Each structure stands twice: as structure tokens, then as C-alpha cells.
Length: 163
Image (tube, rainbow, N blue to C red; front, top):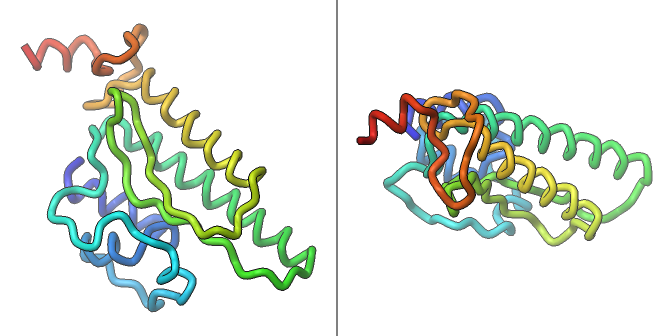
């Protein structure tokens, strides 16, 4: 994915991305990294390449995942306030996305405060994103009628450009 495309994706919901991704893409934030954010490990300390190692055609899937995750975390925070629990706030960061076995794999990093039910919801969102990636051309985002398992997901036009 091109750097400018990554920036346009991350700038919409910067609170879902780790501070080092924001720094790597040159996105400035008013907030400093919280102590919670420092506790959550991060996959790359420094990375020259893109954080999203997949085609731009899958950007709508990543954006939808980020929106769903944001909605889920907002609901979780509201429920935690209603329970008046004194536990620490659970955090989730999107660390990037990559093509794994020719399907989209969204990489997240989380704190240990999530229970199994919440982790199951996040994993379900990840698996749904991977399933959707088999239906969109990874290069241009055109719907694909037939994608073979364990092969590149390309529309007819992008497949012809490869040859």
C-alpha cells in the first residue's frame, strides 16, 4: 500500500493505531502516548517499509475493521463505566495488515485486560475481514466472482496486467 494511502487511513482514527505508526507516517497528535499504550508491546520499533503490506484494494476492508473495532471499544468503555469497575482500561492497537496465504490478515496488539468473550469478538472481526478479502481484488478493490483458495485474489483486468 502506498504511504499516502496509509496516512489517509490512519488519520481518520489515530487513537486506534500505536504511537510509533503515527510517528512513522508523520502524523502528529496532541496527546502523548499513555502509560497504557507503553505497556502494550509493539511489533516494530522502527520500520522503513509500509505498515500495511497488502494491496490498496483491501483498504475498504481495513477501514471497516477499524470502524467496527472503534465501535466495539466504545461499547466496552460504556459497559465498563456502567459496571463501575476499578479495572484498568483495556487497549487495542492496530499494528498493520498483511497478505497471509493471499488473504488479508489484520494484526492487532492488545493489553491483557480482555476476557475470552471480548477476544472472541475481535478474532471474529479479523476472520470476517480475511473472508471478505477473498471477494475483492487486492489491487483495485473490484469484486471478484471466483477466488481460488490459496491463490492471489485478482480481478480479470489486474490478472491480465500481471502477464
